[in-house]
Length: 266
Image 1: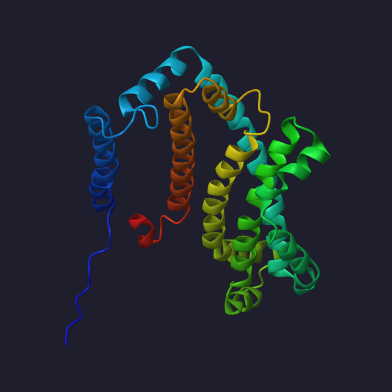
Image 2 (image 1 turned 60 degrees about the vertical axis):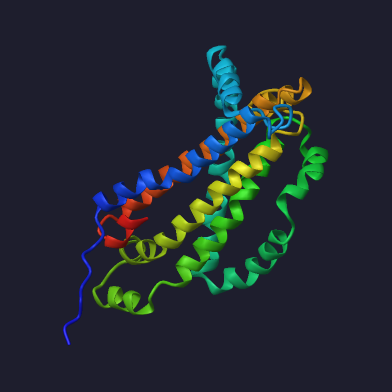
């Protein structure tokens, strides 16, 4: 019996699927606008998309949005970098050393069991209400997704590949470069995507605590003046930033594993 071999996925096929993914968001926007125009949805509770777009244009043209994006962006970048550095380092240690795993993992798992967003009051007591607690909250949200996935990736390195490297006379740096890190990289990218989502969620919460600049301040100020349209626009900006950073991580992943046909379908 002859097996039927499916053709490998192509970038063209992936590109064709992109417009189809826009159908549901466009349908929701149309239903939202029509519901508002017909009176089924109260504009005080949920302003129509046209009002939200007008509010967005307002803060875009007066410079408020650019200033807020710059401040929030700095917080996320600083928190993500700090959390990634710590999470990947701890994951490497526990994933490659049984001693480190025995000593560190129980403590890290205990800390992970505490919801990091619940530490906001403690962070305020310890660090005040400035930038530091905001950055640390984001970093803490990034640490554990990267720690868990990085450790798992290093633990899953095929021992036979390490043996083959030893037979070929690979030095330790060569084994790390050509065997260990490439084997662990797919799981690391999973951790990066999870950490990205956690970072933006942490930013939203962090900026609700006495923020005087940033998207959180923009939203809180709009709330005080009952500007529901501007509040919704701010939330949409948060979501857009998360999606853009997710797309960048996926593009990086696809470029890194471009020799693997399955990455073209993601």
